[in-house]
Length: 455
Image (cartoon, rainbow, N blue to C red; front, side, top):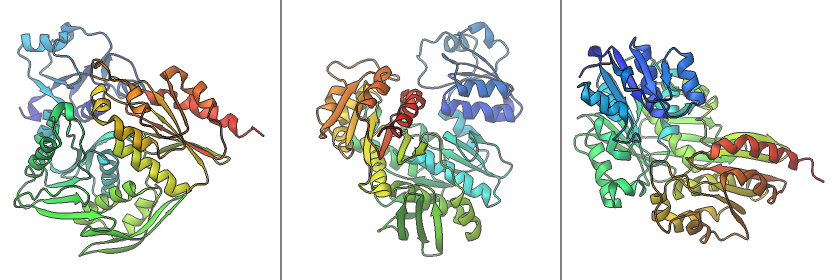
């Protein structure tokens, strides 16, 4: 199927971050877009305000006149609208297949990796557009520079977040690719780390002949054929950062490669992981011809992505930071970033909601070790997402491996009251997880505000 053949599109699960970006693209390309989702959210409200019709009760009769149905893997196979589409012989495609179809109409830049791909995708798109390249972009989060997960451009370039889950990234054939990290994850899909590595190796081999791959120096080598491959990192990469200075307001550094030496760069984000993400985004921007001065200005004004080390409150030596971290290495990275930003002057209180029973089962010991970087830990029940419970798997597995004196288990609705027992100033409260822990952030901020009034 070609995009020009599509006039009426129906999305099942339209409120997802990836699905909503596709819906926005289709709408801006002049397609009639309808959709179903289980619950109303700020994102579905935004789609409706943009002119798309969304319903929250499945109704197969709405598929009359539809010529393409797009669904997310989170939708159960027995969904009534999916069954009706098959009965009517309406073409049905997964989100990843459609993204692949769209990307083949452009020259594409695909950002992959088990961690960091959303931030890097958003920053890459922002730097390119700041440098005069009117790129389209599909971002796996809400970019605060664009206030959206999708940007529509008129150039030949598209920036795409390449998701390894369900091997979705194998639908892409990019001209340029970035791999930010390869750590064991999604073992419910891949089974073993070796199988995950094979998936990333296959993705690297999807890069078009003569294309370019930027590979984090801490990721294992992939050696794709007929591709220009460059490693990047803080110490060992062919592309690296020097003169690095971490501070409360961000990170300053110099970008170095065999072709470029760019001094006096600043990003308003802390931590090694954000610096590495910036190196990848800068490398893509330089490849496409963005100037040094344009990069300096854009980097200094970058705002990041919603729920990626997002500062929600910062007053009176008290700070609340919300982050999507849901893997042990991500938790380790954000907590170490807090240490590098504030040293040991503030108590670090980590609030974490595990995501998926299978991920908890596979990594509970590593979760406990990573959380132990904090001074106090508040551990919430597992967010199941697409999974059914697994016997013997709960947040207790992680809790038993957390080696801090102050720690507590609680339900989601008890987070604020439990946090009150950790009251301290100065302090940084880190809210982490990929489930619905973000629904508690406003209440957490309100609780922390009361701490500044304590004697």
